Length: 161
Length: 161
Image (cartoon, rainbow over all chains, first blue to last red; front, side, top):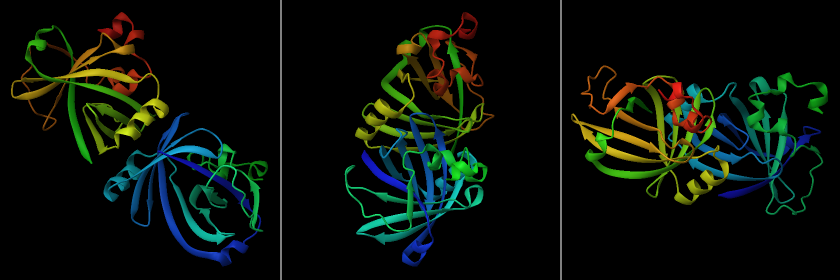
């Protein structure tokens, strides 16, 4: 098991787009949405993984990840995962010595863009980029697993912040 | 993906016990209980697996299985799987040229014993052992994933058949 410590921010400008080093297309879905755990199937550039995460709210979560045969992953996404699937482009941006992952959502979640950074410890101090806005790490509605149940297209203006 | 075709029966006598070739102890739990799929973690005699099954009712179900590192499986069972876990002893019995698996449940499902046989095709004719009773293949309450939500100890006399 790995403990994942990450923080998630909204974006206040498009300035990060000039800093993209590479981008990947993700197609993913969830086999589970229980209160204890999420089980995610993801295809990212022909690489398929199964990921299990504890649903403890906040920045620190237990995480397990395994590779899957690509044909299995395609069947699981097409037949067994919850609807809608999550489709997004992940852009990688280096800033202040950290690798930021900026997720730009498509489909039912089009319009949503969030920036994530992984910390080495829960008290690590990070240099905030000028394009990063509100910290939404603790807001459950931004969890990808929630975006399949309550997609961004249905959020109120208040919820979009 | 494999398509699993199996039938499940109640037992009408203990005569099968004389035919046991070997037995294994299973400890298993579910990460998921959605309408589409179940995700099961199982430890059977130090071997750990993750199993994904489509929840289509009946005898024929899509199934995927992967091995897991044993320490991961122990953490997943202890921390992330739904309560109660399923604990059972699986007895293997040969009858009429088929391998029958007889599951004797413990814990919250103590008292429940079912016999399962896997078919090569959905129209295969099997020789019924004298100790096999009612066919319960289509009854959802006998699914292991349901036994974590509604264990045998809570069933009515009618439900126990």
